[in-house]
Image (cartoon, rainbow, N blue to C red):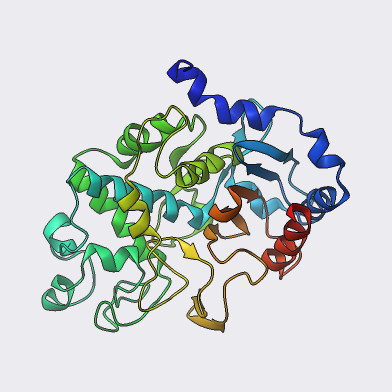
Length: 335
C-alpha cells in the first residue's frame, strides 16, 4: 500500500501521463479532433483510472464574454473556470455527505433550517417545501421564489431555488460553504484547484451569486469518486453508497433528473426551461450515464458500465447536437 499522499495523487499522475497507444487509434483521435473543433478549452477522458485523452486549449478568439468565467490557470495549464450549473452536482454531493453525518434530513421543511420568509410564498405554502424539493427541482416555486404549484407536483429547473440549498448546508453545519466543501469533499478528494468565488457584476442577478471555480482534473475526480462507490483516491470514504443511490434515483416529476444530477436512460426528459423531449437525454450514450451539466456546455459525464469519466469545459460548443455527436464518436472509439 502506498502512502495516503501517493494514493491521492494517483489519478492526477495517470491524467498527466502520455497516452500514445490510445491516441494512435483513429477513432479516438476523431474524438479529440471533434472536441477541439467545438470551442473546447479543457477535455479529459479517464477510463479505469487512466487518462485516454487530456487536452487544454486557450479560449477561441471572439469568446470575450466567456472571460468572465475564467479565473487564471492551473499549474498544468488548464483554465480555471466558473463551471456554472455544474456546481449543482457538487452541492448534491455535499448534501449527501450531510445526510451521512446525521446533519441533514432531506424531508425537513426548509424554513425549519434557515428560518421563515426565505421565499415569496405564504407562510403555509413555504412550510410545505422540504429540502428534497430543492434538490429535485420541484419546489413549486418560480424563479423569483414565488408560489406557483404544490411542492413535489411539477419539475422546473430553478437556479434561485437551488441556491437556497447552499444556505441550508451552511446553516446545518454552522460553517461557511467554503469550509465544508474543503473539509468534506475537495480536501479528501485531492481537488486542489476547486473553490467558491463571488461572481462579478457582469453575470447579472441570477439568484446564485457564488460560482464554483475548478478545472477538468478536479471535475474528473468527482466522477471517479462516483465510479469508486464513494471512495476518494486515498481510499477514504467520502460519501456512502446509499448517498450515491439517493442522488441518482429518478424523480417522479422528471425521470431524467435525480438530486441535482441529470440521468440518462429515461423515457423522456424535462429540460431547462421546462421543455419536454421524448427519449433519453443522450441516445448514443450508455443508459446508466449520469451527468453534471452547466451553461456553455460544461460537461461531466460518468458511465459506470464503461468505468468512464468525460469532462468538457469552455465556451458553448458550435454544434447544437454536441452531446449526441460526441457520444457517437466515443462509442466508436471504445467499441
